[in-house]
Structure formats: structure tokens, C-alpha cells
Image (cartoon, rainbow, N blue to C red; front, side):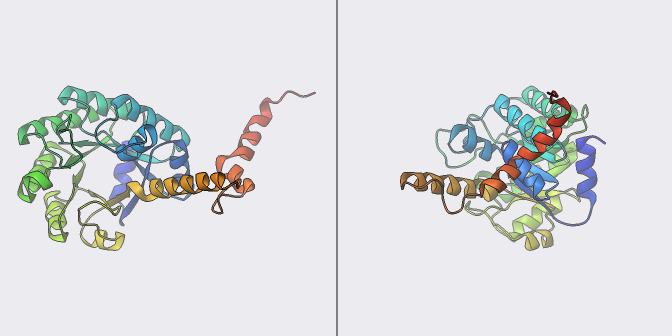
Length: 287
């Protein structure tokens, strides 16, 4: 089965899918080791790790594709939903993004309707006109046929154009053949229910990390509302930042490590030193 076929079968099973956000080999490996079968290659996490900055459309197609390859190499069994942002250009750029992600082994790809480059402010997400958004998703669905990668269509227009427009876009995305639907920034549970209904039985995705001005249900409540997938972009990243800050503070204070640091033996186990030695044995020259 292709990664897309595996993802489709997985999403057809009962239950709510919790999808950690990964950004590199280590984060993907840790999520896989913890038992998660899927991961979201998050643009915000990649921006944080590569740029040390916010997710404001500065990450490029090449950087995201390279991050996807890292994640796939470290956790080859993980079904990766890769953030394709706005497709990095027009409908033809979208096709290149979707095809390239599919060839690299992503199980699904996100394409959104934001205008890029955005205005020089972190506030608001102006979106493409309705028919231009349609053409991007139409192009994505056509390109996905090569590898079988699933297309997740996202609308960011709720804060700027209202919930009626956002629901209309989800209905249009379904008509165009999108496999997974994503309403960004719902204001309340009623809007989530409207978006789920507009998805017409196809899986609905939500960001469940705290902090942004949106309705953020618990996993249990998300499932009750009809959502199928929940991701947590800050779930690993925020504790990782806190851990690095703690380590730096400990070093500055004259200590070797923070109290939260892993024991050396555990550190080596997590990174797989013993596993490497076992795999290398057949190639060690005899004295």
C-alpha cells in the first residue's frame, strides 16, 4: 500500500486520531517511539526550528521538502501529513508541491487559501478569491493522482470573510475532491459543527494547541463534535524550547545540566547508539 492508501485506511477506522507535530528527524522518531502512527509536518514548527522565528510564510518549498525527507528517514513507518502551506505560488506551483511531497513519501498534504506574500503584519490572513482557491485545490487533486497522496484543503478565511464564506469553501473543496477538510480559527462549537457537516462525511482536521483565538476543544469533545484529526503544533515544540532554556540557565549557573536532563544512559538509548552498534557488527573487520 502507498502512504496515501495507508492513511486513508487508518482514517476509516473508528476513533479520534491524535497527530503530533514533528519538524525533524528527532521529533519524528520520538513521536513514533511513543506509539503515534501519524505525524503532522508543521510549517510553524519547521519555521521555529530552521529560522528561530514565527510562522509568517518565510519558509520555502525546498526547506519544507527537506524537512519531510528528514522526518521520513527517521520514522519511515509514520504516515506524515505534510504542510504544503499555500502551495508556494499559483496552481502550477501547487501541482509541483503536491507531486514532490507524494514522491517523497508523504501520506497527505495540506494546501490553504491564504494570499502570499501576506501583508507586512502578523495579524490577519487575507485569502484568495473563491474561484482562485478552487483552482488551487483542483490542481492539487489532479497532481495527487500520481502518488495517491491525500489532499487536505484548508480555509483561513473565517476571521476576515466570516463563517458563511468559510463553510462555502469547505463545500467547494469537497466538490473538487479534497480528502480531508480544515476550517482554521472556528469561533465556537457551532462553527465546528457547521464545518464538519460541510465536509459531508470526509475527515475534518483541527489544531488543538492552546494560545490562538479559536475554539479549542479537548480530544474527547473534538470527537463528539465530529472532528477526526487533532494536531498539536506546540505539543513537543514548546516543552523542547523550555528544556533548552533550562539547560542554558543551568550552564550559566555553573552546572553541567538542568535537573530535567536525561540520564546519559537514557540519552544514548533514545538516540540509538546500541542499535547502531548491532547493525554495524556485520561490517566490522576481524583482527
